[in-house]
Length: 339
Image 1: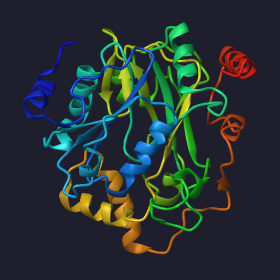
Image 2 (image 1 turned 180 degrees about the horizontal axis):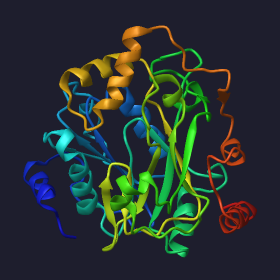
Image 3 (image 1 turned 90 degrees about the horizontal axis):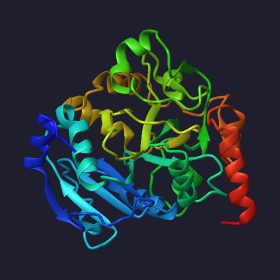
């Protein structure tokens, strides 16, 4: 695959720290690619989760971390660690895309952040290997997923704990969502279609989603929730056209979810650090966070409209997760066979 000028700058700067420098996973296995800075307590539960759901290898790209949080994982053969200290604000997409193109050619990868946990409809019955089988059989090369901000009813709780992250941060809120057709021609397309406009849509019910609990609490922002994390790297796809998008992909006929664990203990400190350093492209979002924390330190995420998540069928019934008749038939067959 060809590299852009900025990707070639990444190539000159990136360093292999530990683990495999080249992956030997098959075209049916999934690799995780994660760009991380000062991941701290997030890293272990993140790694545990992705190996639990069936991914084969985790690749962590350290971007100028100061907390030494990755050193404890350098001896794990299932984990590769790279380092690139180029400015995140200018090279986020290129750092991700360089690693994906280099390591995942003709392979599946999950391009996710350290606070994002990928899940999909009927995952309690359909394994990740089954899911890849479905995608391959239908020639799909990407899956749309929407972030769902999760929070604890006890407030900004530590990500560490005896219970799993999903068990403790188990509340969500679907009010204040804005949905936009994927093949729209309005303001959204005018701003973003250059990043996704050549994707082939297989299910017109899959939409872009914006807003949610962040819009309710922090107000003033659009908060784009839609991403395209699960992708097959062939010669056609542009894997990171934008932090949220891919291009030239054939999109699956179901959507997935990225459980998003941003609102944890240490969130306020992270906001302050970002405001001081101003090293992220979406600084206006963090200015909204900072403004509210400065004026009201006792607000609660849990609203009267918030719900406890028990299983993913809730999200299907509420229209946040989208499936198709074909995908549902496939899940029933897999469940009946007990695969």
